[in-house]
Length: 377
Image (cartoon, rainbow, N blue to C red; front, side, top):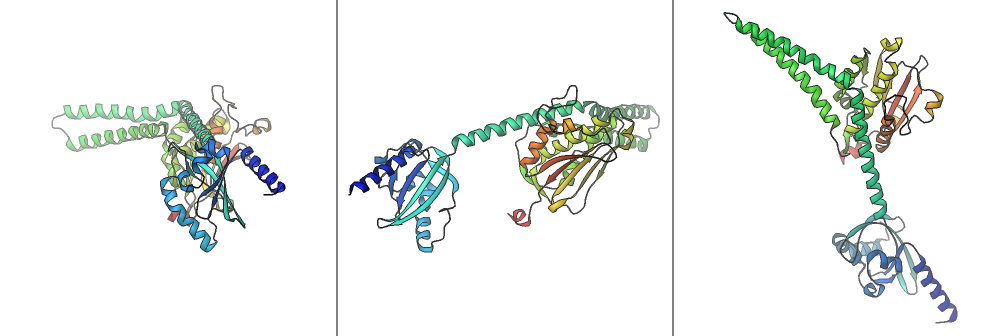
């Protein structure tokens, strides 16, 4: 080896060992021929332990058993599946622990043969950080649900008290019917039916409330947006009726489904309608009510619009309205719109607002539709 070649080899080795990412080079038979220091730290092997061995030792058993086939397929077809593309896969440390990695592969061809260079980044810390962020977001969303229900408590209590009062009245009527002689079985049956109806009504409000407040894991699935809103309509109407504000629902027809977390989106709808109630509670314009509409918007996206006739959003507040802990409510946490925006964005959507020409504001949730291929899968 010439002095120049010796210098190049030394520089190549220094470069390999200075790299933050693991670098593993294999030959066309899948045997490891280069294993830098970052690879040693990442996988727990010394270079001397792995040189000449099959690279499958760094992979889970299922991937390792198929690796030779993948390699041979590429050598025969020259069709890249990973080379030059990169992907996220799993690696296996010396102690058998699996961990997420980002893998990029390049190819070199020289008089020494065809080699494949793998550059590997450990994603463990990134995944843990993402998990912590999701956990924090989930806790914040749950706190927002509890706070929201606290704000809506008067309306919900009124909605439950109405059927309970009716049940008490019907029960007294049934008692009087039983004291008569002869007993009018037909009227008694009718009263019992009314009691049953009112009990079911109260029970439905409580069940809707319990389902909404339950701490849930995020579960994105295909949803009918109209059905989703209808499921929380009773809670929404209870809240608006407590302030004597009419609320109207207008559902668009033929809307495509969206992929989202049902509980999260329902929280968004309730947050927006509650804000609309608060915006109009002490205004003469509250008789004009609140409108909740669904439709197909621009680019075929599914939109949910909540419009009120309050004061609208001021220019000062508009700049920070979706920031956490920003609230115009005396006892508000200021997390409602921030959480709502986070939920909508996690579905690939957007949450925006505009002031209405005739007063008040409209908040719009825009969600991408599920395409037919995704539905089949």
